[in-house]
Every structure is written in structure tokens, then in C-alpha cells.
Length: 121
Image (cartoon, rainbow, N blue to C red):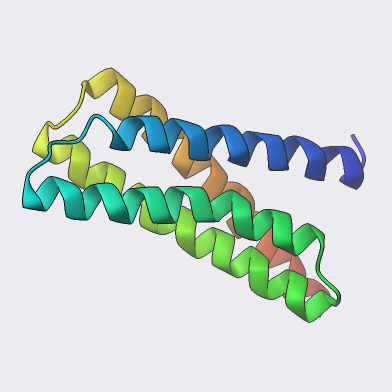
């Protein structure tokens, strides 16, 4: 698979991830605490793909690198919120595990891309 195809597939994967995060957030309790977590996870979970999409449309290597690092950071934050949700037992454990696996895989991908960029500069 070439870089262009990889980028296209990763854009689609992160978009699906954002949609699943939004669906998951709708399952969270309407308590003050639940609303805070709902906002945070929706924001970070949807930002992963939005920043990756921006990276693919960047005007420079520095801009690309910056957007990739933001995607990595947002994926890491999403993992954190998913861990909190899981420990709070707010949603079905199978659903949270599925999302946590995907979030960790995305984090690994963006960490790998970021480390390759660091080696090339």
C-alpha cells in the first residue's frame, strides 16, 4: 500500500472512530460529571481525525509534523477518558474495550508517524 492509499484509509478510520466516540458519548449519564466527560471525550475523539485530515492538507513539513503530534496527543487524551469511563462502569464493558483498543491502535499509529518524522528531520 502506498502513502496516498494509507492516508486515505487512515482518514476514513479516524472518521469512523469519531462517529463511534460521539455515539458512545450519548450513552454517558446526564449527571454534571457525565456531561464533563461527554464533552471532553467528544472533543478529543473527534479531533484525532480532524487534525490528521488537516495534516494531509498541510503546506509544509513543519505544519504536517505539528498536526500529527496534535493527533497523537488527542488520541492519548481519548484513551485517558475511555479508561475513566470504563472504571466508572458507565457503559457496557465490551463497548468500552472495543473503543479503547481502537484508540490505542490509533495512538500507536500516530506515535509511529511522529517518531519517523523526528528521525527524518
